[in-house]
Image 1 (cartoon, helix red, strand yellow):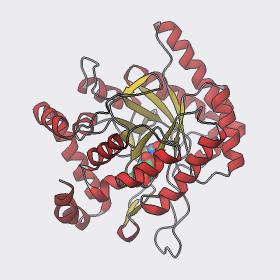
Image 2 (cartoon, rainbow, N blue to C red):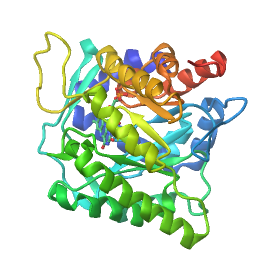
Image 3 (cartoon, protein in one colour):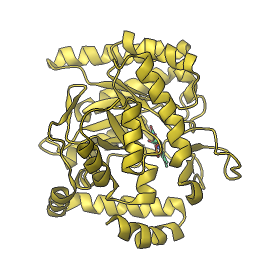
Length: 354
Ligand SMILES: Cc1cc2nc3c(=O)[nH]c(=O)nc-3n(C[C@H](O)[C@H](O)[C@H](O)COP(=O)(O)O)c2cc1C
């Protein structure tokens, strides 16, 4: 399937504008999501299961490869993601109410660097719409893989009130989320990354964990696993401050990393937005993963994201200290069988990472 995609289907997609191509892909995945038999057959062929499922944050992952946030912004096609062999999917970023995101054009391809630049700006239909879609797709509540929900703040919400947006996302979606990711690292919502600074971080993450504990008590169940997604452009000192808060508040893991505001050397394309994909992204995120793994002595599980587009690049993430990997841009360049290819290689390698 990979050869067919890279030699034929990709060239059709790449003749369209990136946003139109994304829209076509989204529609195809939504259609697949609705055809249960096709999903079942594909999953039978494409799902690679580790001999011992990966146990992390109290969840069970059949393999180590997940779809990164941003591809399925509204939770519209997790069943298709499952069918294509992923071990988990992260949907969102979702904000309390729907918002259109930034004006187009806002997505750009750079095939020579296997990269993308995006400044989408959290275009999504809002938390309630996501809730209803997820509930409809899994009427019995049973899923074949964990679905994480990535929550963010609305463009128009001032930073001082950001905590309310995150709490709303958490409350509305708690019964649909296997885990939550707090996204404070997108470069495309003005000021958002300031939430990574000590001034806001403790208040925001503390309020969410408090709500999480309250809800768990009320429902007589465990707390939701809570993860934080960070940027690759932080200094080690800033990362240290974040890790201290995460460990103190009992967060379950960190997703490293979001897109970078830096650019490859001699790059002359779009300067506004986040760069993803390729060796440039990979090196930036691998540096952060290695640092976190060392600094926490492996105490904080890491989901490694950034430039995963082959078994080797996924292996590098695991060697750096990740327990799971996620990908987005690699899927655009390498096609729908990539998760299966990577999961197979990671399984064959065994469990002796780092
Ligand atoms: C078009 C696009 C939209 C994205 N939207 C989100 C988002 O809404 N929330 C988020 O946390 N990350 C988002 N990301 C970042 C990815 O989840 C991922 O962290 C980043 O792209 C690095 O991984 P990659 O090199 O495999 O793409 C987006 C990335 C792209 C390319």
